[in-house]
Amino acid sequence: MKTLKEFTEEFNAITLLKIFEIEVIRKDNGEKDWVVFAIDIDDELMIANHEPLTEQERKSTKIAFKKVDIDTDFDIDTHLQELYDECIDAIIESDFFELPND
Image (tube, rainbow, N blue to C red; front, side, top):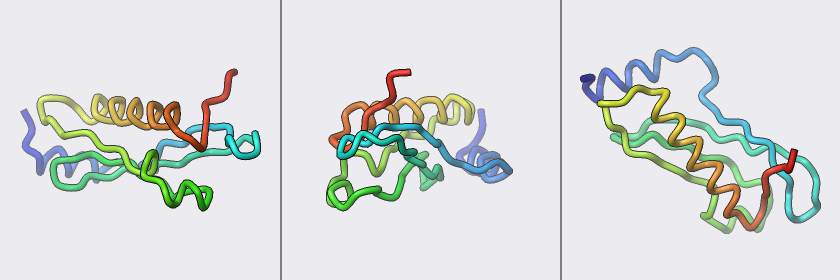
């Protein structure tokens, strides 16, 4: 079992961009767009957040920030998958975006 410090060090050692890039359809104009969630660790949380794409979204908190608790019994991939699922759920429930049908 890893300590939180070891888990965080392993995460920080990842050299790839720490993002989820999810294709969406904007509900306001029907155009394809991408929501990019930046992934980071803050204390005992793995978080994903993104910059709002519209003024209406900027005023909302429905999709901009998702988090999962870090459990060092599980690896980084497990946490990333759980966080990704949270981001997808946020898009599905969003007033601003929907997932493409294809």
